[in-house]
Length: 183
Image (tube, rainbow, N blue to C red; front, side, top):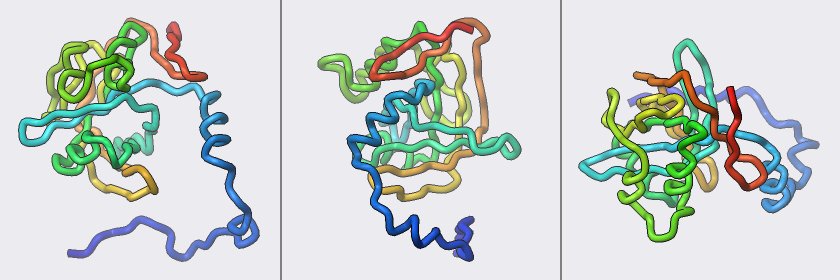
């Protein structure tokens, strides 16, 4: 079966820049702390097992077709469930859902695995991936490509269903803390 790569194979990096060293992982992390980002819960379900994690590495790719990219550490259970199911739901948290964000980030002592779903109310839209009720927005997606990016998988996804609420504040992450942003 032929696979389309979608990579510019006729392009090469600038050789002078390619020879320069990168910053340390610590310097990169410190800089990224100042990058305010929306907080999401990425969820998946396969063969009766469900998993999720708090994530900030989510980006819109195109509106037509409707596509997102999400990055998930290869070492978490959710990564394998997303690979196996071919589906992921991106649940954008509202300011009043910080407790859900903390649970799925592993910040609540003794709460692991499926017990994370005790926080919030959950349903499904189209793919079977868990969808957080009353999230600021939900993007229920099928995975169309997977890229191996160092410690993470980059899942390129097409949006099959959405949900949203028009009230509530946004939850963001900045300088190592959750913060609310009013509309």
